[in-house]
Length: 295
Ligand SMILES: C[S@@+](CC[C@H](N)C(=O)[O-])C[C@H]1O[C@@H](n2cnc3c(N)ncnc32)[C@H](O)[C@@H]1O
Image (cartoon, rainbow, N blue to C red; front, side, top):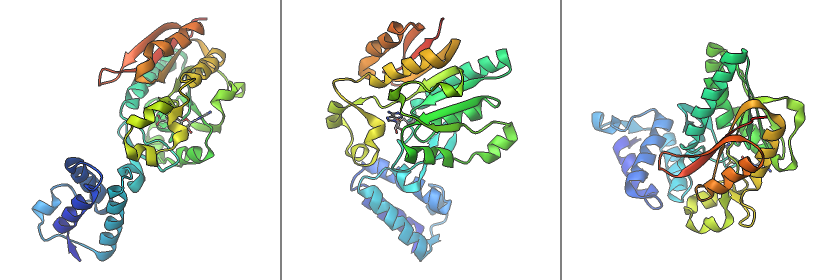
């Protein structure tokens, strides 16, 4: 048996080998909450609280993974997004907080379509963990969501999300996940959509040099990078899918590289979409492009 407060101190020391001290402490508390159900103040309220040898062994192994730079979410296998816990692993990008803004706007549009037509359909291209697809499905009960990714491993994580309790309470329907190469052009066998969204790979290869080492070492490069000489390749592809599959009046939104706001907007304007605008994230950076299919 080991005292919880001693395990916390050991964890902070190990994890701060890679992360700054405050972040390391936060990661230790979150991990122990995941493992033991303790809160960050438990060791203060219960200074004699002990941890079993098997939990100590499990925590030590997790601390050394984090101390070597592995993101907390891959260690716990869980990432918090839009108020829910998603399964994650090394085959999928860890959902980022800015993507919640895309979900909020798209969910509003999807609900509006539902209230006008009594039905609504959304398509999520490059779905990864399925965080956008599931969020739209759960926030808009009654909506039908289709989501595509090229990676079978990512699709298996996306399909593994379990929101069955929430779904049976709200009547929401699980997304339909399909394997597709978005760059190969639109698949027309899934019908038309009221909303099309995508958070595709958009980090330039040359931006690798300014990225955190642990992102580069642990997150899938297939999910992140595009060639320097063709950084908008996925946005041209999304414009083709939306041109074929977005119903007239339908809404589209993509997450973008902050240094390419106007260039990305131009892709959608040149493809004939209307109301094209660049939107900022909470840090004031160009992060999204929105568009409407006018024809
Ligand atoms: C930036 S991640 C986004 C994941 C998720 N939508 C999110 O917001 O967290 C991009 C995803 O695109 C997928 N991807 C990469 N190339 C693709 C392609 N040619 N066709 C379809 N999906 C692709 C990757 O597997 C990865 O899951």
